[in-house]
Image 1: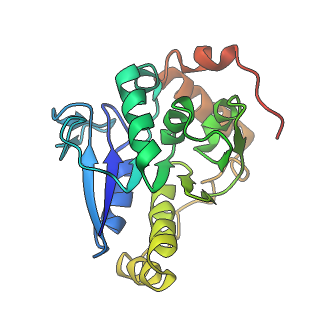
Image 2 (image 1 turned 90 degrees about the vertical axis):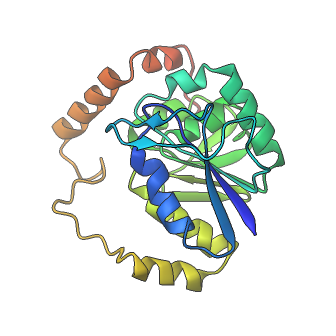
Length: 226
């Protein structure tokens, strides 16, 4: 039995935690728990409230660390208690993983140095400023014991990839079928590569407005060559 610890935080994106939990929670070999800095309810960006199973002091040993993301990870990135817990937990975990901008938390904690990784498309330029991280495209990027997912809905692909890698591709396929995960979106604009340039710019501007201070944090850092 592996303990999967999903780190959740105030104003995070709810699907970044719930999508992986929904998939991973059905795996008999996994015990999935949520962890937050305190046991206070975590209020997500859409006002969904999640009661954490553990805070830092009661968290059991974690085999697979999953770090959720959100539009504005800056408060978490500047919280030394959070970074210290991530370093300690990630240092002893068998796998260190993230969804969306959770990757920035891992990078800020130094847990992605020497690894390939991805994040939400609108935040890749920030991830590229960490000299030890090689930023690559992909809904899910697996590099040894580091597994990172793209933005929000990629958390489903991410969780299925974890199941395939840690248990079996057959179980991953079964869970995908159980969840009727067969995306047929209303539009084809789920990627900046296919969306109109003006739409991409508008979304980027919206993210900047919702994450005050984040761009300034990275402004003095130089992006590494791809």
